[in-house]
Length: 179
Image: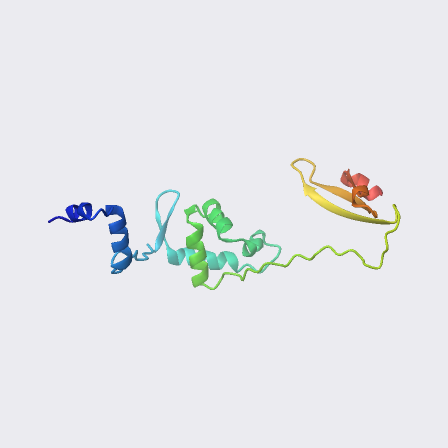
């Protein structure tokens, strides 16, 4: 008797039978073994060993002179470093591999999120009439041609939330400093 005959006789779908046998009879033979090649390729197709890449990483991230243009490479993540390897050294390397090599060399910085501070308005102000309490904020937005343009927002708080309004003024840098 074949297996397909038995499954058909007992009205069992083949896909569910094989799905359940994979779950219950897993021997661990089909698990993927991690295999690292130990090399990467350049743009020309030449092999570059991981030890050479590690040496480049150590040299690139050990610059301590702030006047050196490579000093800011310390702050970059693995994705940007892979782009720098491609541009500067002509080495095609994945950002995951750079992260793995940085972990082996203990060059990975701790990542922590900074908590956002809530906007707190002073509680000692009793707002009883319009034009009594104002808030202002300046933000700088990067543009393509004009550099950073400051945005000045002025908020008047009143008793009724419907009466609150926001006045946003777009200013050039020259006019901001004239205020």
